[in-house]
Length: 238
Image (spheres, rainbow, N blue to C red):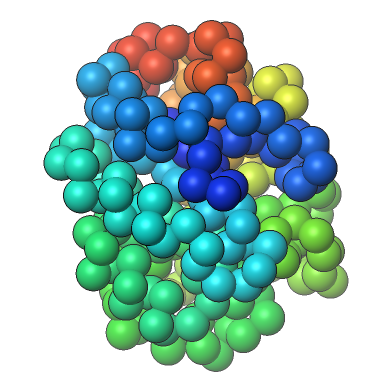
């Protein structure tokens, strides 16, 4: 099981949003490269980055910061999401050394395009599925679609994607534990790896997700506020 510490970028700085609301921002670290190095020093092999400005604007807005992290030679594999909505953005991020890209909004609103890109970049794209309930949310969590989460996941899982990253928006940044029931149901419904995001707070959360067969867990605010130790989380995932 992979542990993916998170860096959410806004204006080039590391922040967290409470339940995805842009006006509820907490800034933790001015220098994202410094934060990435700290995660690597703690034993992490992955880094999860979200370009929050990009998610809202529909195009990469923190590309320079992401390139700086990639060029820092930390040894981290990097996945990036937020504003990846055309092939040019995919090319720019892959050329910058990013391991895989998370496609959310355009996977939903332009499924034919997502199908084409998944075939063109096999194993390089992950589907980002976010929800407040049973329906998929898009556009940086600012809009809910009419698509049912499980149905869309099962359809997309037939493509050559690397993983499905599921975020329960109501848990994100709340440090109240992930949505175990919905995460397991999603994992049981598809054949690709499922990575849990939103609410992971304690080592016991990692242990439970591992026992459920979840392939990875993204940890954000609980790391920055000392609720969970990254080295201990990694140890529990092995």
